[in-house]
Amino acid sequence: MRFAVASLLLAIALGLGAAVGIMPAAAQTFTEFMLPPASRPSAITTGPDGALWFTEFTAKKIGPIPTTATVENLKLTEFAIPGSTGPLGITTGPDGALWFTEAVGDKIGRITTTGEVTEFRIPTARSGAIATGPDGALWFTYFRSKVGRMTTTGAVTEFTISPENSSPGGITSGPDGALWFTESVSGKIVRMTTDGEMTEFALPNPDAQPWGIATGPDGALWFTEASCVRQQASRCIVGNRIGRITTSGSVTEFAIPSDGSETHSITTGPDGALWFTEYYGSRIGRLVLP
Image (cartoon, rainbow, N blue to C red; front, side):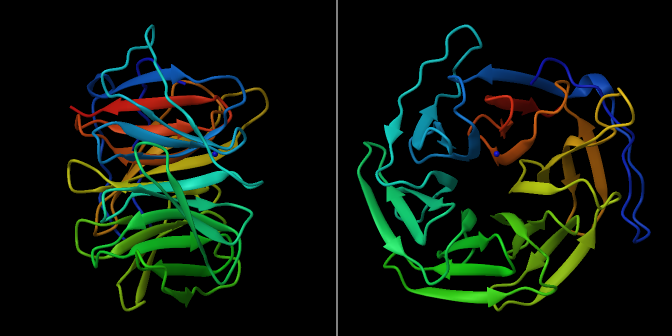
């Protein structure tokens, strides 16, 4: 879980009667930052210290990147995570620390900005993304058919998702006081209340594999599309995009300049830009809105 100036794809509406929207191609600007080789950046969030904190799944590290970083001057501080599992999702918790998931373990971790790590066991293994919910609890996804809720003291509640192949990915606290998460297998964006009531929105193409999701500075939900469907030797014609969905279900998609990057997580930075990870490109991307 590659960029200069983005070209804009035609905005596509959901099959719900939503209006199609087109935005000027030059209005959005992408920038990319190369990370150490094979770091495989997965999730990213705005930290309590104003930096962007991200997980390196393969390297088993967590580190911050300042919003003042330039392509030529990228200074990183990285903290190794103990144990055999790599950190995957990450969010700033209600207690001012960073909280992260462990992709192949049965724990949720907490890390301070100085690198001190505490771990909490959860009932089910293979957690994915994590976010602070509107109720002040930590909400996280499982790779198969569940969403979890955990207090900062470790008390866990689980919600089952139907159908069984839903495969929830990213999760965020929405602008409407609900949780929003992605379903990568079915190609849907889901709205969920804190009581567990769910509404699904199908994306224009079910093969897009929506992954990360975050509330943007414009009050819409922004998400990544991790897939790359090609036609012969062409660039990705499905996936490899950043998407935008309103709370009513209207979708717009933006092509990422670098091909086949497999975008994972996305967050709104303290600078008002959207920051996201490119898993295969070992890069952090930044999208500036007009």
